[in-house]
Length: 416
View 1 (cartoon, rainbow, N blue to C red):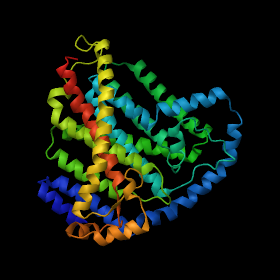
View 2: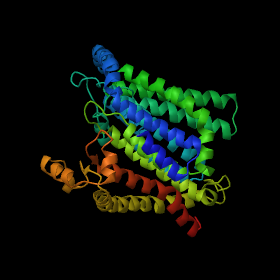
View 3: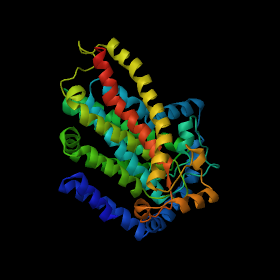
View 4: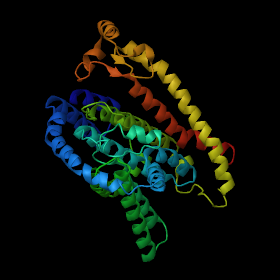
């Protein structure tokens, strides 16, 4: 796999550090597969975590005896406000307010948190508190999907620490502040983290060890991000070979993702945010000096009053949804054709009914596949690849690209 990555890097004209980074990820993918690192690490960690979750079950049941409909609604709403779907809907609006640097940094940080958090979840494959006896409150479809994932670490706790921490850092760095504002900001951030952690236990979604692990991972990731975020932003805005490097990294991260003990939606979330990140990076690269430089008007300024921002939202939201729908429809047709032409073995778990997994179709497709690419893909552990991953990546990349490129161009044309 290192040879494949190195050849791709050399052909794309990547710099030495970019080629080294991609080769390192490719080397990790090979080592993890060859030495079966996911299964070995799971065998060490999973029994201990599962035992802690089981031991905490009586405490969670006692804690849930103090329950009320208002508390159910409060913690359910709070969980929605700090969830990935909420931030996915909120971040486009942040771009359109003129705060592009904050928006792109929070997008990249969210993708980083989502990948690392879900990778640990699926690598450990530790259970959530058993229901029953624990009372699990899943008021939304998003919470029902969350309940299908593994437990440790709590993504809600991890994301809250990282995103609230970075938002507080950004406000205190780029805005006027005094000691009172610093104290208030820290108090609000700590209170929100505490409420989210208690809420995840109250709703029966996590044990305390899941929440503690989420907070600890969040602190480490936030500290790392604060150390590198300016370098990352400078690279995205004005680096060399940004699109090629990020496309290669996105592909390798899909292979680097650990295989869970049983299938969960976590990889689908990663693929979606992986696509969002690539779309944002590509769009910012192309249009930074037009739409995302420091001189663009900010919301509530004379150049961007509230009524103009509302108009942006009313035009922008239908546009990005239309782009997402069209790109999904196009990729559902185009990707299977491309894979078939190139000899890449594929199946579909959802989007393409004709490619649903079955022994007959699998044997038939395997017998027809041939050529150089088949030999290359035979080096990877999978016998066939889920084309839904590519379709999901393309549709979310297209959506994100439209947020930072197509829609701002429409705003400029309409003088919004």
